[in-house]
Amino acid sequence: MACYTMRTYEERTIIQKMWNDGAQAKEIADKLEAPLSTIYSELRRGQDGSRLQNQRLRYNADLAQLRVQQSFERRGRRAGKREGAEKA
Image 1 (spheres, rainbow, N blue to C red):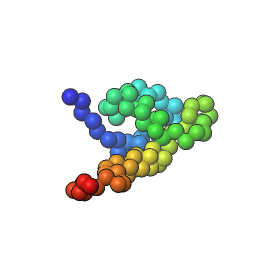
Image 2 (image 1 turned 90 degrees about the vertical axis):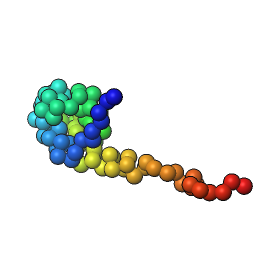
Image 3 (image 1 turned 120 degrees about the vertical axis):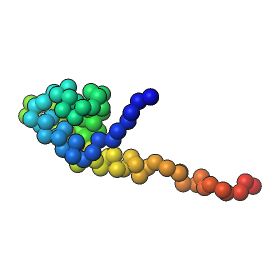
Image 4 (image 1 turned 180 degrees about the horizontal axis):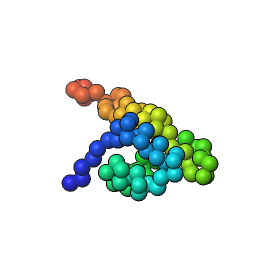
């Protein structure tokens, strides 16, 4: 069974700094002891559409954190589906 852990804001800032300094995804994964696929997902989550000087897409830790928080807010019970509601 896989072990899933959520990246912290501190880890996201490390990713941002290393990515902006030109580090490869593999180097970031090694530093954070995270799977390479996790780093690629995180880099995709934090893309803000702009580019760095080396033409890489920019990663923004604040944007990534916001997107994760919004994802959590969307989870849970859906409107209109109440538990214990009587069937007609």
